[in-house]
Length: 400
Ligand SMILES: *Cc1c(COP(=O)(O)O)cnc(C)c1O
Image 1 (cartoon, rainbow, N blue to C red):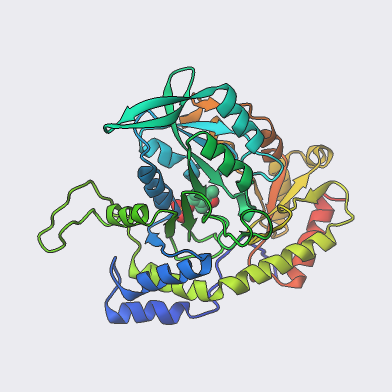
Image 2: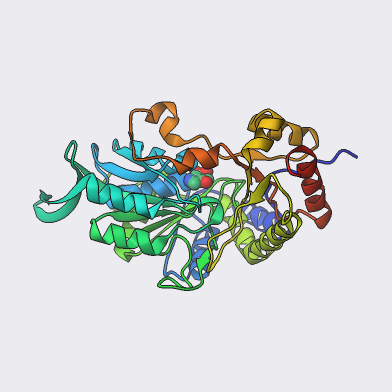
């Protein structure tokens, strides 16, 4: 039989069918229903926060967070360039513009460059907004206000939050954590010991898209440090209804609420999340053992002193093996021909058509990693046999 080992597929070994059918039978399939609140509660408990708000996608979660930050047309928002584009597009939904920041060796935002940018290219100014005096960071060249920074925990690896939170506090920046890939990743030591990805900054965004660690088909959630802000996010995500009977709306709202059908799937997935993380951890450690003494590339490590969710595994290939194979595309294609699905890391966002004229600050490491990394299969269903086969194929094609 032909083997096919996909990169990352959903796992429905639990109560998914039962709960989704239950939602259908109850007739609660839309944006009201008990599974939505249940999912929000389970997530809050898992993340050790008071409340979460479920929504349609991780992209919607990020958009809601940026709106709540008060991002205005013409503002600037600092974002990574090495990420999925959905982390950046919501900045444009607000008619603001991104400032692209480089990554460090964790693939997450480089705090050293972030600080350097804030200190050398920007300055703090007193402004008056909505009749209130406040201090804000402005970009010196054009005087535009920098409202926030979006920090992505890439592939489940935590960004250097101690450094980033300090920089943000000193420079009056709001912090949106894009934890769409990092549900369950947590710090083990330091100032944020025990804290989960997405619960450290002002806002945390999660995604339950089909390839994430848990899925609702499509879906997401937001959490916020300030309960009033989270309440307001809930309000604008549900059409800003002030009176549900007479349909009074005091603000522009969005149809961003998760449906009960999605949430039914989500509740079943939340029950399995700890087991998913356990399997992904085991598989990563197995790969690590099998790839320990190969040449031609290495498995990227996760940040020390953290407990990552091990969502995606990154293999960094040496230049020679890429050249010998005829380029990263050929590596991916040759592996595909053997039934092993892999993927190069995303195209950098500051080089994408809509963003080529945006500010990009000293981008150096992101191109290096984006040209050399492939993600290797990481689904929770992988067996030891599968892992062995993947490694065999890798050895045949790229590793020595
Ligand atoms: C998946 C993802 C998103 C968007 O989530 P959706 O639920 O697909 O909208 C945003 N940012 C990053 C880094 C992601 O990986």
